Image 1 (cartoon, rainbow, N blue to C red):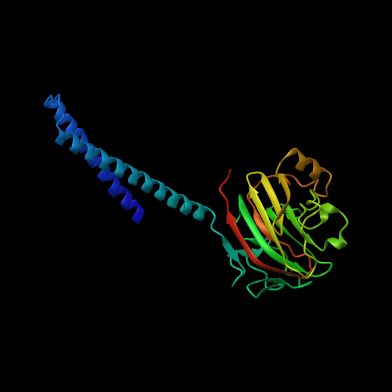
Image 2: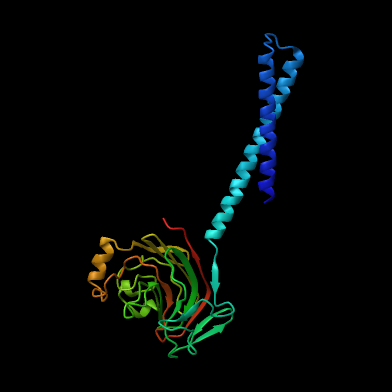
Length: 275
């Protein structure tokens, strides 16, 4: 706001000086002076100098205010929303109205899924279209879980694409391993996966039809929703009879309950501007 008023003041000063110069030139023309005296030359030179200074100041203010406004807009669009630090606000059970009464426990600023607790899958209350979602996760040996996105409640058997989280030593198929688009696309083979018992950091980006799976700072998979490649891969997967699977829709984020004990922390999301 301070920059805004400063810009208005300097712009007004510039306009007034410019008008003053025009008036002086008009006065010279009306008087039909053919010779400009030293005094007039000096006065006009001063006026030109002041206009130049004000123009530079005004341009600088415009740049600063524009940058500040731009940064503010980016912050507004990219504001992170954290989950599970103090409560379960923003989440509920899948196809339920409230959060499960058992199975999921707030613990040390994060979320703990108890083993074989029957808590069930949980989803965000809000639907997201273009977003960045990230989380830390840890599980024991033979663990298995996942994050599903663009989740619909109209197709409960196949709610949405899944970012797989699993003890890779128990799963030989690459498209079933950690950071895969489960059953559809495998992640890159040299992904930096930490072993069971250690924390991993995952990130999911969905913007337009473009999707990225990240693991511990590395982009390990990218694909386009609704593309011929996705349709071909889905057609030979167990999801082949699920209409619209792998296509872009607004949907929930889901943390699955595959009965295996899992810990989550630093769970957060921010919406992205559409392409």
